[in-house]
Length: 211
Image (cartoon, rainbow, N blue to C red; front, side, top):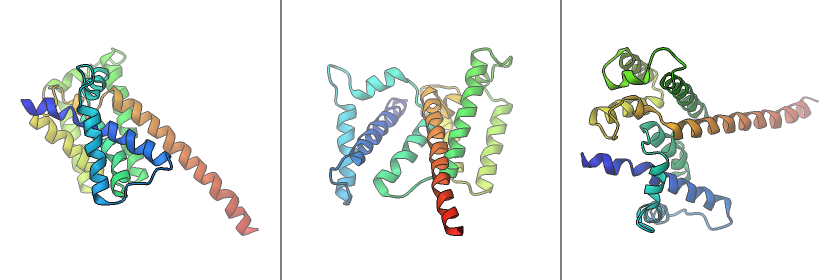
């Protein structure tokens, strides 16, 4: 299906866009505020990502490092990019922390199983219907029941797998990949450091107020 080939290009494009807007925000250049400027950012990053240089585009180079970007990777990059373009957050810090923790735990379990550190090959069960499909369905239903924003991502896992949007036919390749493990681990460290720094800043001010 031709959509698989183009669908894999979305994450490299969003990654380049995230890198561009992050570097832009760190500079003293005028920030993009009007609607046409916000449209210009993804348009320009699309050119940077897809125009071939020496026979290969930047997207091709990125995919050579990580051939299969999961739906989890797509969701995480979109969550990080969205506030820079719209000024609104798709996930709160708490939900982002939960999502990153889920990614890290799931990835470590799958990779440990694949490498033989766990007796049962969990990754192989993603090629056919198994108990793990039922567990994922229950987790999704619980997230929907509690109106957790992460439920949208869990539903996206299932829909993308049913439509076979990725090249892989293994369900777990829709959930995670090596890139997602690295990004989620880094974000967990960043969120933990930010939370600790905020607590340390609040503590002296509260002591000063009480005194």
